[in-house]
Amino acid sequence: MCGIVGINSSKPVTGVIINSLKKLEYRGYDSAGVAVLNDGLINETKCEGRVENLENIFLKNKNDGPVGIGHVRWATHGIPSQLNAHPHSSESVSVVHNGIIENSTILKKHLIRAGHQFKSQTDTEVITHLISEYLKKNDLKTSILKMLKRLHGSFAIGIILKNFPDVVVGVRRGSPLAVGYGPNENYLGSDSYALKTMTNKVTYLDDDEFCFIYKDHVEFYSADGEKINKEIIEVSSEQSDYDKGNFKHYMAKEIHEQPVTIKACLKEYIDQINQNINIINFPWDINEIENIKLIGCGTAYHSCLTAKYWIEQLTNIEVETDIASEFRYRKNRFKKSQLYIFVSQSGETADTYAALDLCKKNNMKTCSIVNVIESSIARDSDYVLPIHCGPEVGVASTKAFLGQLLVLYLLTLKLSVERKDVSQAKYKEKIKSVLMLPKLIKETLSTENEIQEAAKDFAHAKGSMFLGRGYSFPIALEGALKLKELAYVHAEGYPAGEMKHGPLALIEQGMPVVVIAPRDEFYKKTVSNMQEVISRGGKVLLISNKSTDEISSENLWKKIDVETVNDDLLPFLTTIPLQLLAYYAAHILGYDIDKPRNLAKSVTVE
Image (cartoon, rainbow, N blue to C red; front, side):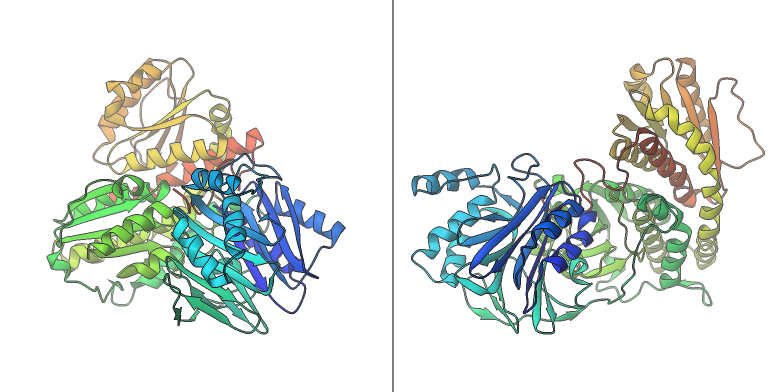
């Protein structure tokens, strides 16, 4: 959510800032803007809509300069509009901001009484006027320190100033911010991904730190104003020109990439010669772990729910799952014997990071499963397991979800054999099965044409239901979430056995219902629930796996068969048709599939 880019250079920077903002489009946004310093003036250009609109305005006006900041905004305070777009500038200060200023209303009243006039509905404009006020009587460093003390909430801030034309200021609390280093220029960015086109050398600010970025050096300061040294990290310099190829949308490409990304992840983690999983060097004694708590948001939370079944099935460890935004505000009883696992695609999810921070403050064992190893969650965890799925641009996660599932499954297997909860023979048998996944996922993608036809009914329905038992229940939740995210159709996921305890009242003639019923131990029970839906007029799309045992139901609407594999790997295959279903439903309705409304790829605010 929201993205920041800043550059201090000896060359014009607007074009480079705009190209970097394009790298941040995956975060989700509704407006964009740039401000540059030139000839003693702040020149601001901003607009509602896409970065390409901003680029077109710039090409006409050519406002440029060697020092500048840019932003893509996801609305929190104030409607999406040109007026509310960032940067927010006074005559002497221009600010871009990610996060939320929780006491903005109080500060705004104070500043209005002091004579300041506000133009927007945003909380960010408070920062602009607050700095302007402090600069009347203080130097720049003192003004930043005073601002830090007054602001409540989470924020990453980029600032340029008319009277300090040689510096870009960066400030962080709770929202990620990185500094990049280049030849005769230096950079500010929301994350390393925004900076990768310019540099692979970065420094990450910690909470309540700020920096002054000059062309030839960077100064870092702590919350008390003391100058500090910060580590420069060399991040992956892979410049994958990640485009859609022959696909119409990134999401379509990412769905079809899953056999390749799963194979790449398996290659990283499995020693095929010795038939062993290379998850080693745990920073704690795994035999002392009595409980595991899995924490995530959205799709990542669904991967946690799936892993709960695996861990309970294959180990003797007690398992709980928690939604990060709930965990961080509850009274938690921390246990030394508990391992806390945090799952996040971006590694910057605000609620998940806050939950991790809470555990760190209580000296708990922490492990993160992320796609970005340079992210805040990865850096602050005791142990990191990357999912190795490469860039994912589509806001609705697909290949990252399967990557999270795979790493969680491999971790479960490793824990089970190291703790002697499963035999070596069973362990090697399961490794042999998991190595078949790339081939089986590729074959399951051949259901695409059948799914495309079924998607018409889901796209035009007023609501739908997704049902599953056991391993299939979290996948039902994920399928419903995907349809909501992309097609804006109301959909609910339920445990199949829970349907008759209320949700059955929603079933009416013609309502499309997905039933996930692979031939596992729950198969007969789930089919029984399916018959209850059919008898009440529901149109059932059954997702099962290939078998000679045919299901007898005269009124079954459609059936999709995925490939057959052992029960605990079925979620990897039953997920595929549901991803395609959501994709095609949104495509039929003509929606922006890669950037669904109101949503962001990286949720960096509460």
